[in-house]
Image (cartoon, rainbow, N blue to C red):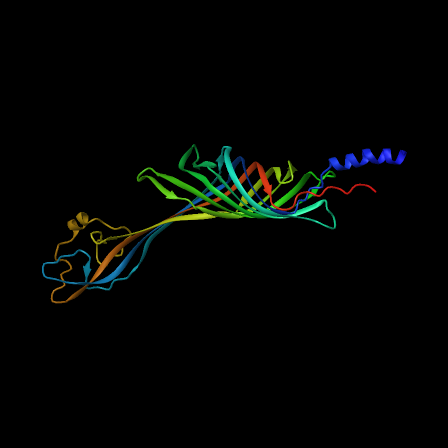
Length: 330
């Protein structure tokens, strides 16, 4: 009688603890808060070359060019100049809301039922954005040379998780890791005191890794609520804005003969020294043309390395069999 009396409460207590089945496919949705962080590097280089080129010019009656000459033309570089500049700053983002949708599958170990592993694919939608300002420091001041903004369109993550169940089989504590792809919209404004503002598009696709962890609590046979924190570290992407400018100055020549002096002289100055028929080709069909060529090369490169941090709550629905109740004591 005593044994039967004791068995009744034990069986009742066991019946109160459901042995949930954690294996199976699930879908879910939810939302949370996320924000952008990261680094921005900007490099600017400029080179300038002034050189002389020798070309053949087909002479026509009535042509009078200051740069015609019967003598030998020696081509070469007259002047060269190069300059580079670098600066760095941070992405400054504010927290914003986002929504998420997830599909996954879990496996509960048969050898050790307290271990659960799984795989998932989820996508986050939200307009997390961050801005940045590029500055240049001189000896006595700092001034803005550009600014920009980066806005997240969506974040797609493929990953897996592994965790340990609580003794009552209702709560899973887990860690996760995955591969992520992010799409952004962004623009960069560069300021020039002579040319004004120029706007450039920033890189739009980034890839990287995600790590995180959380807890999931069974609300019923099929419904679960998970609370989770994640950090996504995306690889850096660069955009280069180059501009080549080549200017030929046939109206600028070297005064004197041979014309190999250091600086080009405007046509008006040459007219004081020379006469229009100084280099008359006569009956020759071709004359040597000495052209002063100025070539400019400007290159600006911006390197972005954004990070995404988030906290989320997700409600999931699991497909599959219902939980199995413990067998009564015999």
